[in-house]
Length: 404
Length: 137
Image 1: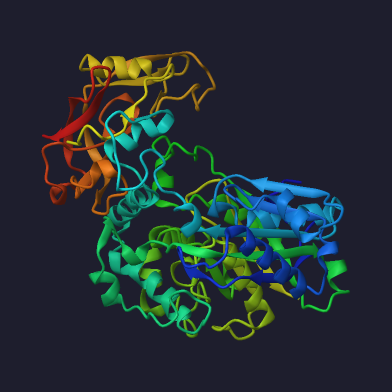
Image 2: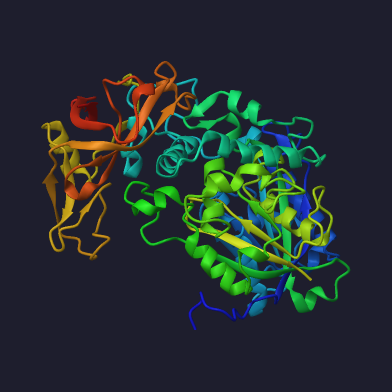
């Protein structure tokens, strides 16, 4: 059986039973170290599940995680750690770590796996910033750059915003997508943050006019097209659905999980097939995910879509079949993404743009809240929530969570 | 185009033919000698057939802007006084229509557009390294 066809053996057999998070701050605002934040998020998630730290025997994290799992296990007093997984990349991994946790508990290699992400950009500097001569304060003659960056840095391509802007521009050229379309995504996220007291941008509403007036970062991307910089940590507890039935918390089923990289995609952005220039690179992940969960886009009640940049969200919407290729712009018009009346409410806690940028794992937490019925922008009767990790950053990943 | 503080490419084993040619005023693109497929950026083997055998095809250096961005927010000290500047991705007319990240040297950033015809020029940044950039035609 192909892994992309139906009857995925893990469908609904694993569950998220606990979520935890710290307060979220604007970058530099945290009053504790990144490691302390990681410990707090994990403790809260485990307590939320109705478990104890001694029950945790697996950790699933992603690249760039500075809160070392061995130090965390020792500090928290975990016993018999039997499974540790480290996924490559950054925000692309936010659903893959849950996938790997599900694989671990379903196979019996572990009983209870915690996924976590901690980030103190104030303490450690900005994620994704150009590494050579980083920062605008200093630059000396004689710096060099090798590998594929030798073809990008010396022509001034130095940040994620700039690279992703190239794809957004191409989408605009081919399909007539506009900056206002991108802005509608920002507006939907910011509106949700106004109902979420935990959101960094709570109390900071955003109109489409505000979006259009904001300064340009890398054309066509303006300030509010770019995810914010945050401090904070969050965590998710995964176990089998069978074990979950014995716990006090309400489990949220992992109906489907998928990850991958499209043929020809990868770190060299220039060698990719042409169609990937106007895609989030997630069409294959979407195909696998829907097949594994046994549902389609029409069954999705609410979605948490990772915003590195708004254009990539629009391309994610296309890749996951909510509209045809190239029609993401018209699709987002008329409040489609806005809670409560839109057909596809997204990022109901505010998302990376307006709640907090914890490299996407906070989107999983919000997906769980939606299916527990505890979101501050609750979609009535939500049965299925799609969660998508970093678009156009392969290998990337996605989940379909189901109310139990 | 950019000040001397701009990072300079390291000439590595894989890319040495590319930089050597640029220093001599030629834009070359890696080509598989088994199946003939071009590839850029340079890579260790052909994604089409898996062969590691390759040579370097000389491009006429003409193409069009496939996409671009205008950078207004500097993230590196070398470009603080250069913004706004445009980064373009040029689709070459030859060599398998590969895409080349670069700049347009003689064009105000707000005049750059998708489909703009360009041709290569050679920008010597150090004794060792010359970067192929483009100008409007």
